Amino acid sequence: MTGNGNIFGAMLQEFDSAARLMNLEPGIWRILTSPKRQIIVSCPIQMDSGEIEVFTGYRVQYNISLGPAKGGIRYHPDVTLDEVTALAAWMTWKCAVSQIPFGGGKGGVICDPTRMSRREIESLTRRYVAEIIDAIGPDKDVPAPDVNTNEQVMAWIMDTYSMHVGHTETAIVTGKPVVLGGSLGRREATGRGVMICAREAARHMEMDLRGATVAVQGFGNVGSVSADLLSKLAARVVAVTDWKGGVYNEAYLDIPALMDWVKEHKTVDGFPGGHPLSNDDIFKLEVDFLIPAALENQITLDNVHDIKAKAIIEGANGPTTPDAHKILHDRGVFVVPDILANGGGVTGSYFEWVQNRHGYYWSEAEVNRQLEEKMVEAFGAVLKTALKFKVDMRTAAYIVAIDRVATVTRLRGMYA
Ligand code: NAD
Image (cartoon, protein in one colour):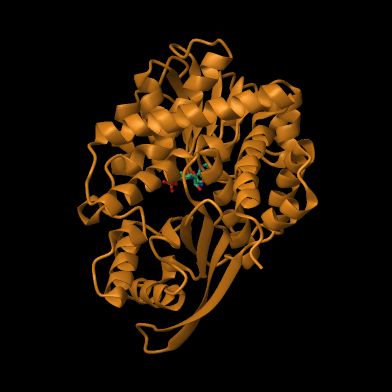
């Protein structure tokens, strides 16, 4: 979503349509549409060339009524405060829908890590953390990976924070390497949540998942795990695309073999188990499930009329534009929105934080069991709301989220 105009405005549009239906009182409306805290920092770094460069970083804590702020940190040249604020708001609603005791946060640094050395990225990470250190902490704000940040960056964040407080503090950040307090099953949690949403959607639509056809755009963390787990439930994943190209087999694709191919070739393109398929054509396929798991703004007014899928499970954040979403809903396509469908990721992060704080680590089976419980519960609450208000699942997810944050806001009252 990096750099795409007024993203906060788009978030407000979604918020407003749900808030109107709920008759949300104006005061609470005002609170929930105002970011609690926006931090802007300058991070001077000595580059390998000897030059000093100053990078601008942001950390936004949108709402912390339910608990510590939670949300990733992205490194990208197009990061803006507007974007970080919108993403922090979406984290607020996602945590609330998933019923985890976190608020919403997000961070970003304007930089191009593809043009920086490992040492420069480490220095920038440590300086950024030092600049925002008073605002973060296991009870205050717990960052995580996002675009262009990974387990290594999380390890540097944990180390920098730990050096400042004088002891090892694993619960300061999630998405860490497992040996440093990361959680088993966290890497797969988002894709697992997508699979659970597809399964629950099939149940609601009275469709047999066994033999159902699935197309997946994006074969990274979210897309590949979703495809793998759905194929293990005997769904037929017939099409997959990524940045370079795609592959289609009308019977089904051998997903484990495709994963091996991608390990070696870094793309699904050229996989011998099917025919080539373009990124445009994946949206035209007659499939039961379409899973966008790559980028934002993929389903738009330009291609929405080509879509023949019966259900769309949004693995990616913001893959469907609001106007395209309206058309899908009017046509009876069942869309499971991002703030519900990919909530398995932040739920897995919550489990990591819980384990860090207990100093007691769960088996992968236990992580998966608890994730299953949380996702099924969240899906059920949103579906029930959609049926009650006679609205689409996205509006329903907002209603659930807003109601939870509004309820605690009213209970806590105004401090003045
Ligand atoms: P990733 O980088 O692991 O994978 C992205 C995939 O998208 C890759 O296969 C890439 O080739 C493909 N892709 C990139 N550009 C494309 C294009 N133009 N057309 C088609 N495919 C393209 O990323 P990820 O972690 O799997 O995240 C995917 C989406 O899910 C993002 O929107 C992300 O914000 C969202 N998400 C991820 C998590 C998580 O835990 N990883 C959690 C919540 C939401």
